Image (cartoon, rainbow, N blue to C red):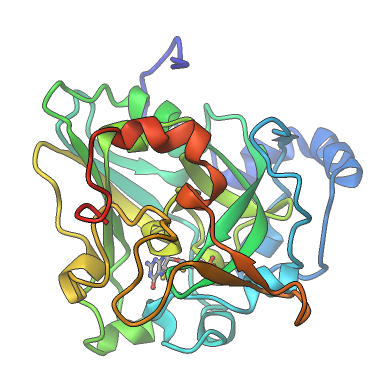
Length: 316
Ligand code: MTE
């Protein structure tokens, strides 16, 4: 696992993001013009920031063609903004994703509150084109921008008691109208076993299509675990906590027989109310839109070893 030579993080040494990226504006502009930029308008504050710099990780990318910007940013699940797929796009535009603070807590030597800039600064961003499979049996191909979660977690020196990592979304019913209703026990929570969190495919995502994340996609920071159902990909994270015991997670608390803790994509284990054997590829035509779901969403060669010896019908 890659380690940083200087793991110290100074919450005081804050450079505003615009200044930090300003120094690199020329380079960024060059990189952006050479990069694949799909779609025209960004949304919210993210659209006013200097564009992110990144390199493309072709090795860890699928060769399938990405969905359109519209497919990815106007059809979303983000219950904090409503239950309809169009609600996040329609209702999250004014959400304030900057400035942003992230708390690191629990079983780690370094803990505390850090600005988004502190969190992002040492990490080079990569574009990875991942398959994304929602538990509702739709899927799409998305060019995320991010960096390995493992690199972030290592900076805080998790102790030997850190067996799980818990993530929490912002709680702010004033900004998030969905939190004024009781569909879920807010704030949204998710968690991974530490080996899942440290897996090189697990991505801390800050952008998509060469841009900073639009609000509806989970600005400014969200998780993507490509071999798991989409609900593990918690959005707008404000807290990361290392724990010894398995944390409670939102969907598992809401409906434990429907949404397991592991939530690995598994065509052989149906949801109690629908089959998981096939998926509808968003944006496909009627001939191409129904496709077979693959074990671990097609990432089985990379991740099956994490679950060796486990009964995946029981640990769904
Ligand atoms: N994170 C938060 N905070 N709230 C949510 O409602 N929905 C999850 C996940 N992360 C959700 C969330 C679900 S069910 C899915 S499928 C993905 O986000 C959707 O991500 P997308 O809208 O970028 O496709």
